[in-house]
Length: 224
Image (cartoon, rainbow, N blue to C red; front, top):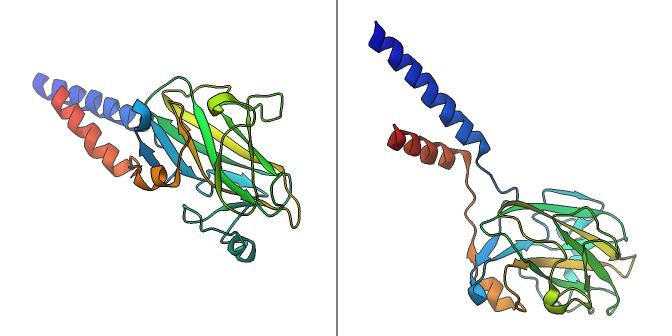
């Protein structure tokens, strides 16, 4: 009977460890993204409509007439549209590195310039005096813009290894003066992105629960 008891205890211990590892493994809340390793760094490229949570801001699919009025096609499947200077969109993603962060956004507007967005990394301080960058628009043509008056568009806050959060929020927008957001890029090294950089970036591979199960169970079998 003793070997049976030991086997049972071992099985329980293994399964407990298995379930613990399974549930603590991080899962990126952003469902689709791209990654690259330009300038000897790491970059993540996220579509503005791939948010975890949003309020008031709209998508191009919801505002087809407005979306169709932009002068150039966007890079992502859809765009984010701010009809008023309120609301926000939140994003959660996983980073393999920690340290300095440089943020750029591909933006447009229907005013002819003079509109802007806040974007903030790992902070609740979204206002001008807080931790956010201000990304200015330049009319209906899409353009990559960095933080206003911030050298190299360096974020006031750093990347964390593991889970990170981003919030974008319209700073100015109104009827007929809507602000548009296509894609934002966060990099561990400073450089100005291009459309070609985005198009060449590889698609991210989310870790689904089924993949976790197989990977974790394989690790446990190897350990025991």
